[in-house]
Amino acid sequence: MRTDVAVKLKLFVAVLALAVARAALPAGPADYRIGAGDLVRVNVFGSPELTTEARVAQSGTITCPLVGAVSVLGKSTLEAEALLAQRYVEGGFLRQPQISVLVVDYQSQKVAVLGHVARPGQYALRASENVLDILAEAGGVIAQSAGDSATLVRADGSKLELDLDALFRGDPKHNVAVAGGDRLYVPRADQFYIYGQVQKPGVYRLERNMTVSRAISAGGGLTPRGTERRVTVKRRGSDGTEKEYSARAADTLEPDDVLFVKESLF
Image (cartoon, rainbow, N blue to C red; front, side, top):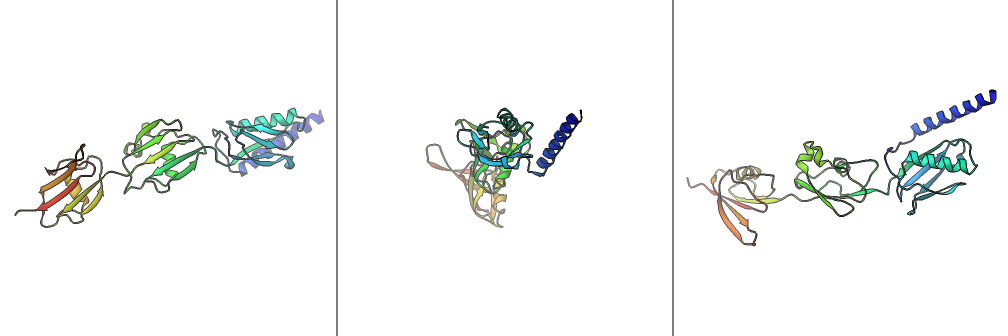
């Protein structure tokens, strides 16, 4: 009876030590699936000589002391812990192993973020993440040059168009989940050109449903000699030819339109 109590006490102490040790280490997400290239740390409590760090091979295995190669590909850290404990028990090496598995370097699942974001590059997934999460890791879109939409290219080659305006307004339909191998591309915004009697002639970002009046405001407003009643727009058609139109203040611009604000006649 005393022996059973002593065993139970030791087991309780071991479990408590496991909980304390895991709390002191950076926890990984429970739903993350281990993949090739990840670096994992295996802690065997009470047997420090068995503790190891191993890089997951392309075959999906890690090599651990005594038990050799163990396949952890596609498993969560909790599943890997249970599998390793089983291997140590079946091999007769440990009776009641207390094992923790932590991913210390995420390498297997990455998403590429390209285009007009603050920090383009590849970002490792540490959990189930969505478009907003990965954009935040990339520093967000560049407000002055990013377009109103983005393209998510899946690992299988399929494409999904995302409305960034709706995304930033909180529409969950556009905040889709991303997965390893996906590419998120934020293109340059469409532009328009404005010259003539405006304070700041030049090239500007074309906002959605932008009118001639708003375009003049973007250009710093009219000079004392300018007027909204004498504006022309040069626009290139689908056949490549450029035509000039008279424009009203409420007319909507198209990409690459060239506005010219003329002097008032009076």
